Image (tube, rainbow, N blue to C red; front, side):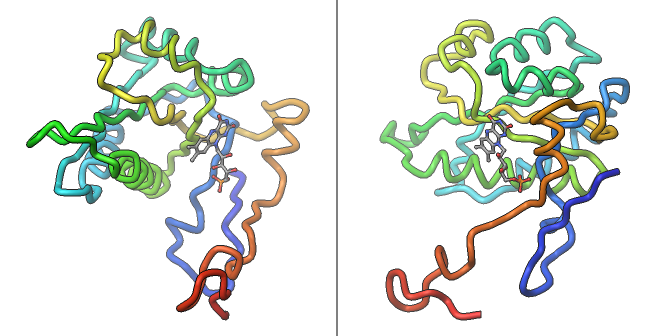
Amino acid sequence: MLKKPATTEIPIHELIAHRWSPRAFDPERMVPREQLLALLEAARWAPSCRGEEPWRFLIFDKQTQPQAWEKALNCLEDSNQKWAQRAPVLILATIVNIFEHNDSPNRWAAYDCGAACENLCLQAVHLGLITHQMGGFKLAKTHELLGLPVEVTCMSMIALGYQADPQILEGDYLTRELAQRNRKPLGEQFFEAEWERPFKI
Ligand SMILES: Cc1cc2nc3c(=O)[nH]c(=O)nc-3n(C[C@H](O)[C@H](O)[C@H](O)COP(=O)(O)O)c2cc1C
């Protein structure tokens, strides 16, 4: 299994270091229901503004709902379909961005959904699964094909499954699978006491 742990200045928890976004999914290996449930539990326990839990997740398991899974796959941009077609599970992460208690806009809904998605992805690492989040899907088509209510905003589609040999990928996909993972220097985005004063390592 190809591992691409984060290269860090200071050691970080291995769950965080080992999460990455592979594209080589094993199409033969389905995700057991209890593992899927564990991921949803992890997402469920994310913090949220006012405890609103504004996320709604729609799960498409190829094993149990092949036709629905196919529909979800068709919502993806072609460039994502090429590799995500091997993922046995697709998860659509959405939000309802209106507070339940007073119908006012919840501007933190997307923030909270991101936290829930990261929880899900980290739990996946713990269970030996891989995830790849995607923003590349057709919004109108997704609403129409999946029959989503108007008040729902789609955030990401998450491919989930077990990792395969990277060599099942071709061309640019293979190159990217094998490429080193990078991040901007810490001081470019983390400031100390004053805007744009780099936090010193
Ligand atoms: C909201 C979001 C949308 C993304 N959209 C896509 C996508 O459409 N296609 C894709 O191949 N990767 C997509 N990615 C994966 C990112 O490219 C990847 O997370 C980033 O390059 C960092 O790599 P790492 O996850 O391996 O650390 C997306 C990730 C996030 C969080």
